[in-house]
Image 1 (cartoon, helix red, strand yellow):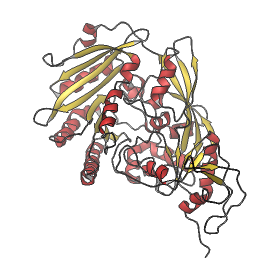
Image 2 (tube, one colour; image 1 turned 45 degrees about the horizontal axis):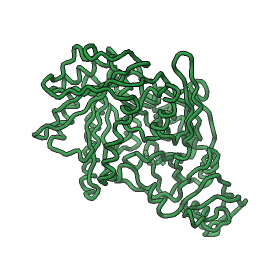
Image 3 (spheres, one colour; image 1 turned 135 degrees about the vertical axis):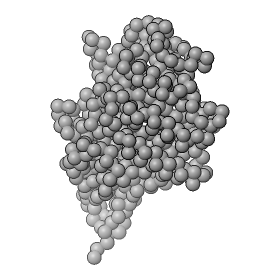
Image 4 (cartoon, one colour; image 1 turned 60 degrees about the horizontal axis):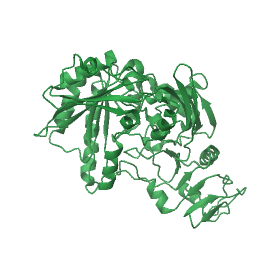
Length: 502
C-alpha cells in the first residue's frame, strides 16, 4: 500500500520546501506564497495546492509550544502548525484545506482556557487575535446602539471604543483581557448577568466560518440553527470571526460596595433579594477562609450606576433591608466606570510581576440550582476547609436570573435564580500531582452538583467525556448534534473540548 501522509506531515510539508510557503528567517515564520496546483509532500505523496494566504503559517518550535499551552498550564497538546491569519479569507482557505486532509482545527483567542480546550494534537491552531477590528459603532436615539467587532478584539478595547460614544456593552466578565470570540463561545457571565443575561444574550448577529469552510452570516432570523449552535457552542460548529453586540447607555461613574456577612444563608438570601428588586446594576460575591481555614467570610460586591445610566446613587436606599454585618468592614466608594470594569488589572500586573500568573489554574466553575445553593455551596466549601486557593485565588458565589438567560447552549439549572460557584485555584506547576488531584476533586464536585440538578460553566478544569456533555446539554443535545453534523461534517473543530467523539 502507498504511504499515507500523517496530519503533521501534511502541515509541515506546507511549510518545508514544497514551493508553496517561503521561510522568513527574520520573523522565524512561514509566509504563504502562490499556491502550486499539486505539490508533493516529503514522503512523495501528491497533495492539493496549498492556498495563498494573507497572513502567516508557523511551524517553528516556539510558536507550536506557545499554542500547546493555555492559562491552565497543565495540559499540553502540540499542534502541527499555527495560522496567524491576515484576513478572514485565510481562515476559510485553511479550514477547507484541513477538510481535504482530515486535519483537526482549534480556534484560539487569548488562550485563557484551563484544560486544553483550544489545543489540538498534530492539527492546526487558528489564532483569532489578529481579527481585532472594532466598529462601526451605531447609535440610536433611545440611548442604545450596536457595534461590530472582530472575534480577536478584547473586551477592554471594545468598551474603550464604545465609551467614546457614551455607550457600553451591558455585560462583562470580571477580567477584561479576554477575546470576544472566546467568551461568546462559552457564554460570558458576570455581575451584570442578573439584568442582561450572558454576553451571548447580547449578540444580534455573527459571522462565522463553519467546519465545512463556509463563510456564513447568521442571526436569530438568518440561519438561526447555526446562530444557536455557535453561541456558547464551545467552537464545535464554526469559528467566530466577528460579532455584532448590543450597547446600552454608559454611566460616567459607579457607586461600589463591599458588604461583609457571617452567615451563608443570609448572604444568599440578600443576593437573591438584590436580583429580584434590581436596585444594583452589578451583583457578585466572594468567600474567603477565616483564621481556622474554614470558608466562612462572605462578601457581597454590588454596584449602582450613576448618571446618565442611572440616578445619583443613594447609599441609604441602596442598602435598605440588607442584613450585612454592621461590625465588619463595609466599603463604599465612587469609581469611574472604566476604572470599575478594569479593577482587576493592577492585581493581574502584580501576579505577572511575581511570576505566579504562569502557575497552574485548575479552575472549578459550576452552576447551582438556587433552591439548593446553600446546601450545595456549604458542602463544597466544607470540602475545601484548610486548603489554600493560592496566590490570587478566589472563591466566587453569586446569583443569575433565568429570565435573562436565553441562549440554549448556555446550560442552566432549572431554577429562576441559579448561582455561579467558582473556585479560581492557583497552584504551583512544579507539583503536578497536586494539580492532578485538584482536577479529580473538581470532577467529584461536579458530580455532586449534577446529581442535584446543576451544570458546569465550561471554562474550567473538569474532565468531561461525550456522555457527560450529552447529560450537560440535556434537551438541547439533539439540535446541537444535528448542527455539528450539518456544519462540521468531518468533525474537525475544537477536539480539545471532547464534546463529540472524533
